[in-house]
Image 1: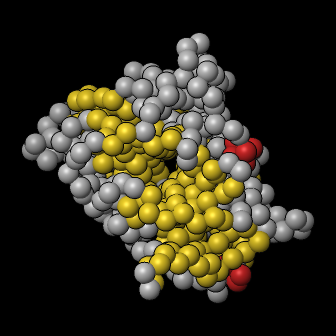
Image 2: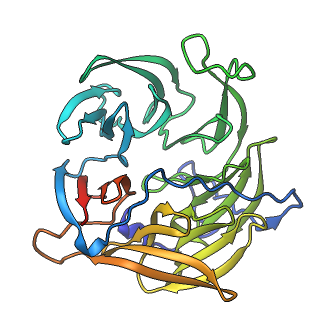
Length: 375
């Protein structure tokens, strides 16, 4: 999502989608269902430095190429760069690159997820490749594609859910769920135990050239799913059944994330103002609305009730706590982006991978990887 996307008006009921038909307008509804709290899983390392004391350790510029949020895999920092996946060592030197897409000009990798300690799920324009990696000698990496899935195109979403189901989605607008063939025996993925389709939900969200849905696994058999351009959020059940249990219009989200077992933090636009909302994970209702002066996006959890957030003009660490019967949001550390000079980091950050208590790695919408370190 670009910064310009946040200024768009929601599409009208009469506007047509790319197939020429009227957009499906989902009316808000509530069904009776068993209430469940989410399960918040905090990051392994808590970032404890003051953002005002940050220095840029390393910058890698990919010249506006599409790059993913970085991940730690195989002891390396990895991210996808257009058609390939790059592996970087601890000093951020490139030690391995592999093209997974081919030479078609329009095809590229859209995302990578870690399945296990040696396997990546690589979603691309034309297919999903589930790939096993090997390192028989230090920095000598090879790989083998074990399974490919190509039921649609533009695989913008791949996610391993809390019960080890694989969720894929693309241009067909379906949320499709896959399970290992020998799931009951608790065996791992491999050449003799691949994923098979076990269920789907049709027409969850629309898909556009410049916008696609996002999800949060609530780790309780449910997903929080949203679509920015359509100003729509849905709660989806994936265990024991596959179904939409709640739909709500009017929330043009930039991003969202769990901040504890009880609350999801939503950030976005409700024209003409910007807001932060808290949704109760048990009732699935908005319980607090906070007007925000900036076009903030939720960037990532740091620990319970503490998170990175920011916009195209600042980067912050905020907290939301329940004090004396009220939700209180506080900014405990903030760094404004310089309008000129070396600290002009360009656009908003896309996630923050914490390496240690003082160091994190991020990418931005301009195709740059930045490594920050505090005091």
